Length: 277
Image 1 (tube, rainbow, N blue to C red):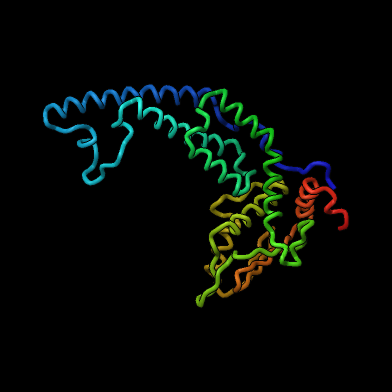
Image 2: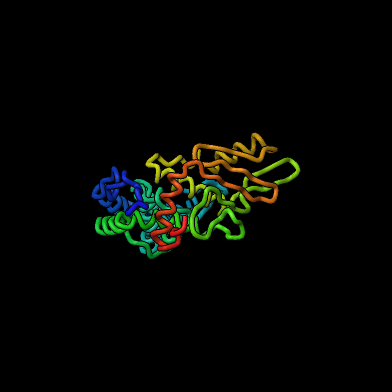
C-alpha cells in the first residue's frame, strides 16, 4: 500500500497565471468609476425629468424591457450590490484558474457555488485572495480524497459487487439510465454526477488531463445511448458499462492499478478495512 496517494502533481501554485495586484487594482478602479457613473446618471435624470423627458429608468431602457438596474439606484444602495456581483464573478474566475475545481467532487463544487450566492463571502482584496487560496492549496489533497470517499460511501450495499470495505472489480449504481418504448436514455442527477466524479478521480490518479466537461463520461455515454438506443453496453479506456431496463448500471473498472490507488485512500480513512484482500 502506498504511504501517500499520488494526487495532483501539477497544481503547485496558489493561483496559476493570475496577477492578484492587477485584479484588485482593476476592481477598485472600476467601482470608483461605477459610482461616478451612477451619480452622473442621477444628474442627467434630474435634467431630463425637469423638462418632461422622464428619468434614465424610462429613456435608457428598451421598450417593453424595463428591468431593475442598480445603475438607476442611489449609490449607497447600488454600490454594495454591484460590488458583490463583481467580487462574486472574480472569485469564480480565480477558482477556475487555480485548478481547485478539478479536485472537487460535485458536492464540494455545489457548496463553493452556494457559498458565493450568500452576501457574506469575503471581499476581493489581496489578503483575502492569498489567505483563501493558500488554505485551499494546503487542503487540496484532503479535498480530492474526500471526493473519493464520498463516491465510496454513496454505493449501495444491497449489491454483492459493492463491497462495504473497498472498491472491487465492479460497482453497481442505480437510476443512471431510464428505459421506454424507444429505448434507453441517460438520467440527469446525482448518479450522473457520481459517474463523472469517478472518471475525474481515475484520470487524476493516472496523472492525465481531466476530460473537458463537454466530452466527459456523461456526455460520451449520453451520445452513445442516443445513437444506439437499443444497446445496453458502453466502453472507454477507464470503464466498461452495462446498463439495464430497471435503471441500474454495472461499471467494471479497466485499470486495477488505479482502483487500488482509490482503495489506498479508503484504507487511509477507514484503517483496517482492507486487511483481508
